[in-house]
Length: 288
Image (cartoon, rainbow, N blue to C red; front, side, top):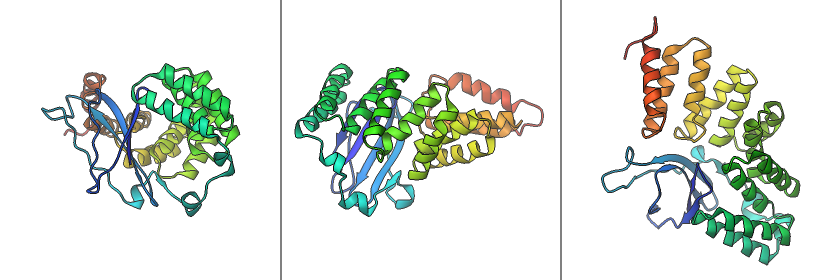
């Protein structure tokens, strides 16, 4: 199975992967999307892509290749995950699961209000439904309702401490709330649990940057860029900021240039191109 989710709102859709490894998503609006491919008995593979006139062909199509190899997995399934289900998740009622499924259908239609209604019903029926609490948090986060998102993610963790998503999501929302010291343990845990998850590395790098630990920030932001160079956390721009602090205009310009390679249709494109020219005009900067 393959899934697509917008990085700008709560839109999400799924499609089967055919026997030849191909899959399609149709009629996507212009924007940034994360593609996730789920391979049974192996793991999850995620990459971010920009969809728009600058990346699509004349027919509005964008062809992508997702590399399926253990070294590229955002998450590798452990034997425990492959063959067992937690008692908490088994205790979720069928009615609650049905409400959750209806919520996901509404999200495919970008109907957040109806999705929230179904999700609230799901957690009313089964308060231990951590995935539903997490999805409520994601919707609130996309709406920039960070306080509400924090509450939902915390409840998800309380109900199921072994669920990864609310941990990494809470780490992100705390960064947005300007609380990097509080976010650090969560982002460290996320990167420990999934060391090849681009989001975990990007957030941990951002966290270290906010705390002034530049060498650690560089390490994790470089890894995020390696894993998913088009990631919505924009690791290249954060790396550029670090290089500017270190007085390396060439490296800063190279990172901005790399960002534009993956986001040619960005609203920031022209100001960033101007920044590249300015950086390369500085005394001592290398000329392309």
